[in-house]
Image (cartoon, rainbow, N blue to C red; front, top):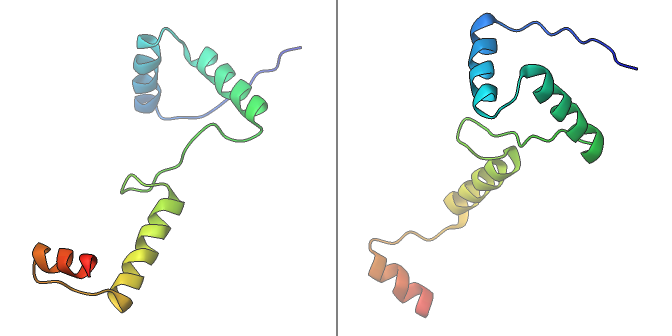
Length: 89
């Protein structure tokens, strides 16, 4: 048994997506069916969300935490040579 799904999306987005899918040999209906099949198979969304900086939220949190730790506890060097001397000691 089949069912129909209606989705509202602005015209420009639909046209841009259709062009991309056409290059891949797909139409919107086929792409949505593939998306649903992946959700069903994986039992989760088949997407990796990224922040505006290009990192996953977990990666960005780790980087920001590391940066904060470094600001509080890190050692500053005036040159690369000084940093290598410190690391080699």
